[in-house]
Structures are given as C-alpha cells and as structure tokens.
Image 1 (cartoon, rainbow, N blue to C red):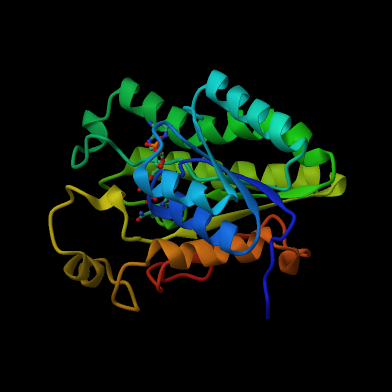
Image 2 (cartoon, rainbow, N blue to C red; image 1 turned 180 degrees about the vertical axis):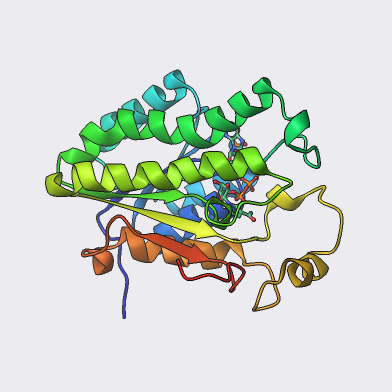
Length: 250
Ligand SMILES: NC(=O)c1ccc[n+]([C@@H]2O[C@H](COP(=O)([O-])OP(=O)(O)OC[C@H]3O[C@@H](n4cnc5c(N)ncnc54)[C@H](OP(=O)(O)O)[C@@H]3O)[C@@H](O)[C@H]2O)c1
C-alpha cells in the first residue's frame, strides 16, 4: 500500500525534535508541504527546510499570539490547510514529586503546554481546515488511559486532550474534518533526558511487551497513515502505540 500526502498542506507543532521532527520528516517524504513550528528552530529542522517542502516558523504555539502567527503564516503562504498535528507536550517539569507537592503553578503549566496549545492552535487554524475539509491528529499519551503516579498532572491533562479530540471529531466530522488521537507509550526522545536508568532496563521495568522504547519514526508512520486519505473512514479514534505496555483492551 502506497501512502501519499502529495498536494497536502500540513502544520506540525513542537517540530524542533523528537516525535514532531520525525512527523515533519515523514510528511515531507510522503510529499506534503509542512509548516513546522518550534520556539527555536533546531539544526535538524533547519536542515529539513532544504528539501523545499518544509517551512520552519519560530513561534510559541502555546500562546494565543503564537497560534495566530502560525495561522497567518499558513494562510499567507498557502491559503488553506489540510492536516494539523498538535504535537507539543511536556510532562511534569519537577519529576519525582508526588501529588501533594504539585503546586497550582505546576498544574497551570501542564494545562497550558499540553491542553491549551491544542485548544489555541486548533481554534485559530480551523477556518483554514474547513475551506476544503481536512484532518487533525492530536498526540496524547498512553498515560491518558494508564495514569502513572510520578506524572499525575500530565496524565490527567493529556486525558483531557484525548477527550477533547472526540468532541472535535463529533462537531466537525459533518463539516469534513476527521480528528484522531495517537497515544504513544515510552518513545526514545529528549523527554526522557535526565530520567535515571538505561532505556532498555526502563522498558523491562515498565513491562513493555516488545521489550523496548518506540522510535519517534515509528510513531510518525502511524501519524502519516491517519493523516492520509487511506484513513478516510477513521475519526474519533484513539490509536495506542506502546509495544503492548497497556495491558487492557482500549
Ligand atoms: N517521548 C515519549 O515517551 C512520549 C510518550 C507519550 C506521549 N508523548 C507525547 O509526544 C509529544 C512529543 O513529545 P517528544 O517525546 O517528542 O518530546 P520532546 O522531544 O521533548 O519534544 C516536545 C516538543 O514540544 C515542544 N514543547 C515542549 N514544552 C513546550 C513549551 N513549554 N512551550 C512550547 N513548546 C513546548 C517542544 O518545542 P520547542 O521546539 O518549542 O522546544 C518540542 O518540540 C508530546 O505531546 C508528548 O507528550 C511522548
């Protein structure tokens, strides 16, 4: 099966590294034009711009101004949008503290980064998606279904992202917009920097059935499929990609 995104205009947030960068690369390889947002354009992202398919935009998409700047860039360059990937996300910045130590400020930060980025960017670019119909892929986490004690705020807020995605799928499906969630398990990115322990040992201790972390590219392949017309009948779905870590049927 060939998957092509030829002729599609896409927007990927949090594109400087990790899963976001891998999605940008996979989209551009599949023929899409990619507007790639990051607070600071990384070397890897700048290099992808040489393909001629990738247009990095320096913006903080968590803020209303950043989201507006992105929508303006997409509109002025391409006049429409076919695919939005809301990828920005971060777990508890002060890892290892328990629920009682998590302050209101910590909660607010988790809500801003993980939920309000999705709300603001989606709200600003929806008019561009509605021009010809399109699709949204929100990057949540398996922690939305299997909350983890060290990161309760992240888990709860990402569950809201998964939940919101279903509402968006219902409201905008009849207007030609598909909305799906990709819920990765542990994936080898900067998110794990500073977490003590070797990733293979962590994979074993977490109980990942396939015995290893996912690679960002593996998550990106799933995003490409969901964003493509091959997934034209899929909306409101939650795709877990976790090597078997979640032991229940979901
Ligand atoms: N890695 C995993 O194990 C894992 C598992 C499940 C879900 N996920 C989800 O996958 C997505 C990508 O994560 P990743 O693993 O690729 O992490 P990553 O390498 O740390 O990248 C996260 C991206 O989010 C952006 N970001 C983080 N904090 C931000 C903030 N305060 N304001 C604006 N942008 C911010 C960063 O953009 P800048 O370039 O602007 O810094 C970065 O590009 C996230 O939604 C994460 O929750 C990851």
